[in-house]
Amino acid sequence: MSRCLTFDTGYPGATIELCDRYAHPSGQLVLRRCAVYSVLPSNHLREKGTTMRFMLIARMSTEVSNASVREGRISDLMQRTMAQLQPEAAYFGPFDGGRTAFLVIDLDDPAKIPAISEPFFQELGARVDIFPVMTGEDLARGLQQLP
Image (tube, rainbow, N blue to C red):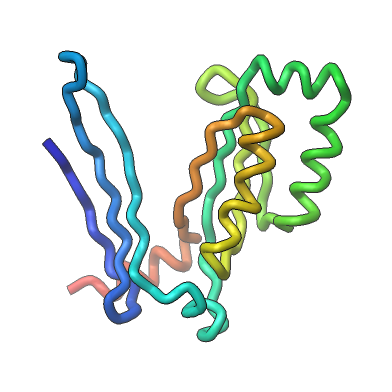
């Protein structure tokens, strides 16, 4: 079974698709989430001078982040990350049972995703989710476009 929502981005041929897919491996019910982002050429956002706002959620492995805290590496990693990403907003706190970073970032090129997420993967054993978000003003403009 699959449920999908498709959003038009306003660019010709470009959509965002969000899906929940249910599978039955080994007789167990599993929920997998996927996001398929548009078919825009990789340089499209740069050519248009456009950026999109994204939420990055990094759920850190407790074991790996504990070691990073004990060794004094986590502060340096967070300072480097803040300097590199220059987030619009950054929040940190417990979520889903572990240390979590919530960052609102602007992204102008999808090729930057590996450089953004790899430090969280490699240094903190984090599970990273990146997805588009809107401000209240963005939502109001979008709702005005509904038929």
